[in-house]
Image (tube, rainbow, N blue to C red):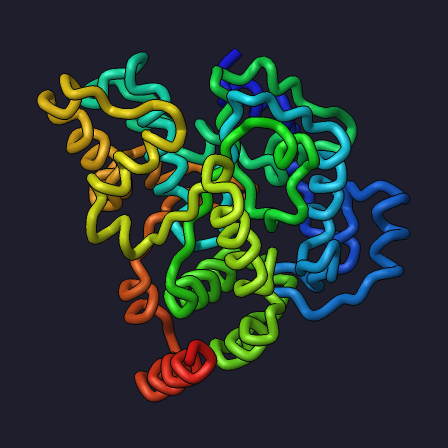
Length: 340
């Protein structure tokens, strides 16, 4: 069974159900939640959400209700194997790119990067499914991860502390990518305002910035999320690889080699001579991925259009309405103060 088939089996929604009018915000937020999860939500702090009515303080990070339910299921049921690979990020920090690179690296013996490669016809999020958004999103059943193509390659936005014990205690590898917090913030704000339901009021960029600095963002605080993986990468470098988005952009070949080495799939001298590193870099590049038809339509994550996954921060800034250069300048200045 392919990854795409496994994911589709987890999300069978009839046409009649999809055609129903949207429920009120509070009802929509709790739709499909178990009684146990609803009871939990009543006992933990909450704040205004970005694309949902509320975010909840769960296991020392902010999370949406359906994510909480999926994470609890994942923590209970996931039995990670030593050969598994977990790709972790905070949202909008290079998730799609990292998934594409890792998939291309571990499966390069199976697929030709120049023709008929799965990345040419499938979105990276379909090939490397999220634990909390796809594999464990259905509360009525847990996936058979043994049916995934090996090695098991999955993604998550969970902080390191929230990962299932089997991930932390087994020999499976974890890769984390960190991105400039200002770029991450702007990208998150524009993305979430674009995909939010009409039943949820929009946030101004200043309101969003204040919330972001307080840590109130999905899977935040940003700083705690990043530091959790960074500390683990220092203490157990064989277990966690900590990558930086900006360094990967500056030296993609060097960092791709580092990724391949860590995952246990180093490039051979023959592959180096044949330009395999350069081919994978080209295949997974932003410029190439955004031009593929599969990434111009369809929805690989929830109800998020694939085309929204391929936008540069500067495109976001110039394309966003009602944002003056003064506002952006002030927010950038405040970030500088926070980082000092």
